[in-house]
Amino acid sequence: MELVETASEKQHHNKKAIILGHSLGGMVALEYIEHLFLVTPTLSQGFVTTVRNLVSGPRNLVYVADATDLSLRPMWRSFETSIVNVPSPGVFGHEPPIVVTERRNYSAYDVEDLLAAVGFSDGVEPFRKRTVARMNYHEAPMVPLTCINGVGNRTPQQLVYWDGNFDEPPQIVYGEGDDIINL
Image 1 (spheres, rainbow, N blue to C red):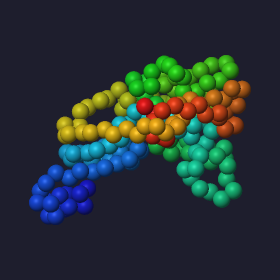
Image 2 (image 1 turned 90 degrees about the vertical axis):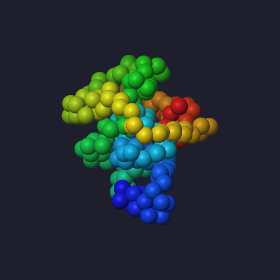
Image 3 (image 1 turned 45 degrees about the horizontal axis):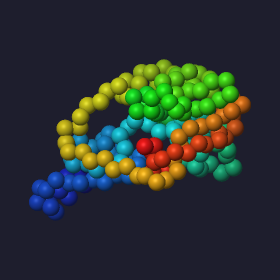
């Protein structure tokens, strides 16, 4: 923050600073920087990759030699941030479901049930207390805000665990977005 203020005050004669963030970086910038003109591609309303990491373990996020996604799953679930960007019901709605199995589909409204189904019942209460509360709290940033969304890239939209085996990698159904954030 000090770097931004210094650049704005000294180098640019108190002109407003413009900070550009891409994809998840934009969400992080929006969370931590106040009172600035901020260009960001996403608000903190979640995305499907977060669900994949919770269900089957982090893919290409944490490098541990010879470790599988499944072996890293308990560690990933222990991180406070593992449930931060679960898709918001207000944005993702009931259809299409985020997770599809032969017996049941899970929409953004069913995340608590999904956490229990995948063996992460310890995550239900933190999800309820921290993530749901944040999803339902929308306060205008009180500064000019421009959102830029990427388009034209295959972006995960649904995770299919047809036989209900959450220990196996899912089949991914793609939709429109910037490769991470759905439109």
